[in-house]
Image (cartoon, rainbow, N blue to C red; front, side):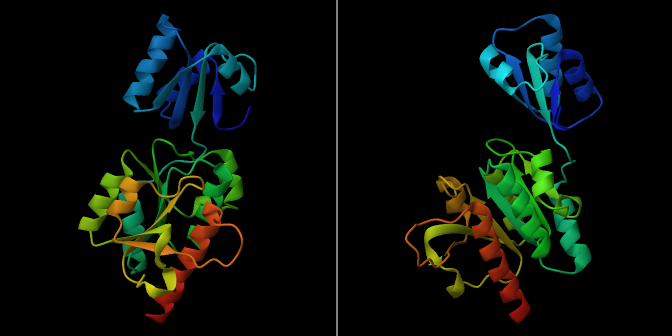
Length: 245
């Protein structure tokens, strides 16, 4: 069994009671006996996302064949707080540089973004609680060790977090094909870089909260980049401008 998937009622309940961070809980739809209700109650205490699914779905997900109607997906690494990311910038004596991901659900992309964040000197990564992959072992492997050094915070509401960070002096730029060329924008100072999913990009609600939209000049025959590649290009434009400021 992989490090982030936990199966069976006793094992899942123990995971909650030991304080393990559980990103998602899957329960057999219609199962309401005592032990399952206890597990669901522990999940609510932790504000864990609970999904009620069919037996076929659970069987498909199961790695042991002994899920007993419950499967938990636990984080392989602990999450940081947004304050930890700001503190890291302060301790380095640098204006905050934070990467925020809107609905990125591919673990390989998240791992690659964490790796880029580390190498580009970003102080941390913020992901939303819903419609986002968590810190799984696949994410950890893809980050090539960067997950040990770059804090990742998970927040309930990405838009609200942007509003709170704006009050602390951050500006926000999001990647969008319809935006201004990134080379024409001033990306210095305390900044949050927002990257969306491959399919949908940055959602309208989040895009409207950003101060700038940055387009990456493209000359090929297709019209979009992989999310982690787009993140790398924009992150290093921020690095270039910081070095020249």
